Length: 423
Figure 1 (cartoon, rainbow, N blue to C red):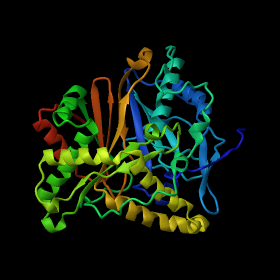
Figure 2 (figure 1 turned 90 degrees about the vertical axis):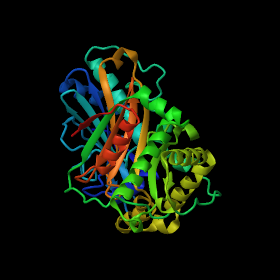
Figure 3 (figure 1 turned 30 degrees about the vertical axis):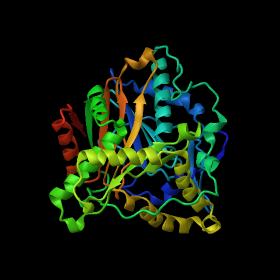
């Protein structure tokens, strides 16, 4: 029997247990497609081996009087067969349930993590460590090298991996950041629960990077601007001006390098580049410029600490702390909608450039990243790069896919080749 330990949820993770629904599952997904079919037995053995390296993931969620908390899960996580719709049908709050799952089918290995537990960086480290051990089980020798997003399975966890870095960075003297206004939301009807449609585009990295350099911006800034332009085009084509609202894209930023953190819990904040189509016409060049200057100003430790201050002060408020959990479960969804999803039209997450030890890199065809479904945003996008390709995945809870169509058509008109796949 495992020794039971107790862990607190981090500042970002605390809100998710209260807002989970059949649509908003809190699960996001990172997967690797291998060159050969997955050996299920070897994968299970690899999972068993690495779990001791991630004790903070080896947990189940429990109800306290005032907050949820993590407790060591005495059961063994089992590899599951993958399904048609990712990130759905998982009640992570149920007794004995893990807050992540490992799924496999044919040549694909996928991990789906709840944001209660960690963010994209934490899940990526787990998947890469799992892949390292899996290939070792198959007889391939590889070492992590200097890649700090890959752990040696036998190593001892660093104490910094357990910390809530939001509270470490928090400075109560910093004032709150500015208030937001309600953003435009797609008026498309939701699919029935359990359906999460995925459209994935495989794009030559060099071509896309050259296009972003033409505009003298980063890849994230260029794609964010193109996504804003796609929403603007949708409004112009389908809606009367009186129904227009600000178009705001949620762009999560990994805070670990900015604040020198090693945490394996959530440690990200959302940027909010936007335009207001009610103010007049916008060219793509104008949108790119607005996004670029916004990101340069906002991705700054002092500005970011304003958001951290707001979030942590809310948690530390005496009234909030003493509010029974049953009341928090009623109030937090309302607050989340007001301060979160109401303020965004869509989202775009960049998981960055993925690397693996060269001994096993040739055994992996590609990686993919699918953000967690959300009823307020309806359509969300995530991307990463692997070898010479960039993989952009859109997840949507609606039958139709107007934003994706506009987005990729605009890419093709720019001369960027796009290969489309779907579930």
